[in-house]
Length: 87
Image (tube, rainbow, N blue to C red; front, side, top):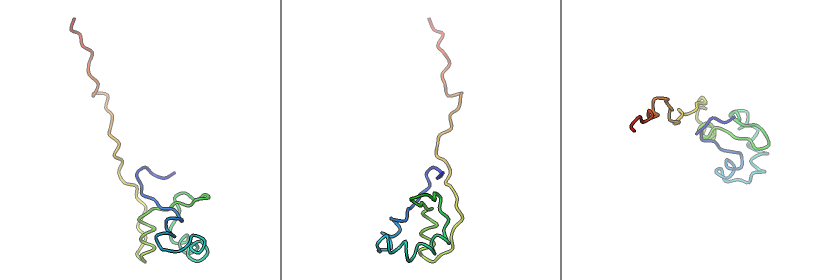
């Protein structure tokens, strides 16, 4: 499962950014890329962490995968109003 709010990229987008057809990228470049960058979702469509993919393509060290902090607001039971007793 892909962590929430994590930027990702698939192989079609990688080939497009590199500027070569997808079939050429899969035949020529994908085997080395797949060894260097772990897929987050390895099914019919492989999905990779965007920062890791860009680092590999730029020849930089692969950063460790981190999921960004969740921006989901915390729900607290004290946020409810007490019932009104005015009559």
